[in-house]
Length: 424
Image (tube, rainbow, N blue to C red; front, side, top):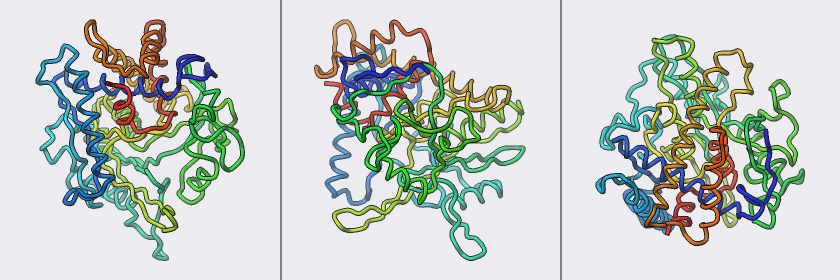
């Protein structure tokens, strides 16, 4: 891996936060453009605490911020060759009830009013029903204790596959790993000065490597108490090992693993039903807020934008997409597997499709935001936009376009805030 150590994602002079804003904004606008250009619908969904009583300040701010975001994206889309009637929409994520609603890979082209877009119906396989109940904590051991599998903390989503003709896969939980050598990646040199989160180091308030979410102390809790698998500590895995200031960490979400699994079974058993990828929101965490302990559950039934891009690229459009956080989201690199396996070969194809789509949406987004007569970039972000254009012009590796999005996701921020900051 060619690690670039410098102040900004693009150069020694650029601002990494503004760089990340521009990269993700162009990707979001470009994704909207590509879907609408092909005659598909596109909507961003957000979650509110109580849909029947929108009174909390947090909800009202979320609504206003999303309306502003969608209006700015549509302004950019109107600066393209799309018909004036082609606009993206704003909606609310399906209501979470722990009974049936899940995130589905492959139903995103259905009408928004179609219930089947969000509801898989009754599980027609015993194995799928068992996995679903196990994920939600509905299964107990012989002593009556709830069985917990994999990561159960805040923001936890677990993937699984249903509808396969020749057997069921396991559950797929979010895990952490050390990014292997595959193309250009970036590590900032001015973390403290640029206010990019915890500095690198071994202390509790630091973090072992760039990309680690929050700090070492909180990551230990994520691992020990909430069950996340840290592949970087697994000595049996290739390209893993001790994290340091030259390492980059990524997190692979459950839905992405489910997509890989479905594609692998297509590769192994062509012509047979390979299943549908699903993801269930399950996370729960107790936080101390102003001296009072409060339990927060993960209930948002929408894919983060990063997941949605990967799903779209591989033919599984998300049932719902949100523009919240996708902190240090990552693909699973095929080089981590043995190169001669079906798993590695199918994973490589998925990643190549994803990288190619990243290139497409970044280029489409740039065209929408700046045309011959219209310039929609905030003056604060003009330098970063110019640097992105220069990067796109000179970069030959398709994977580096995907890596650029991965770099932007290591600068942690809500995606709708990035859009609102970048577009005038």
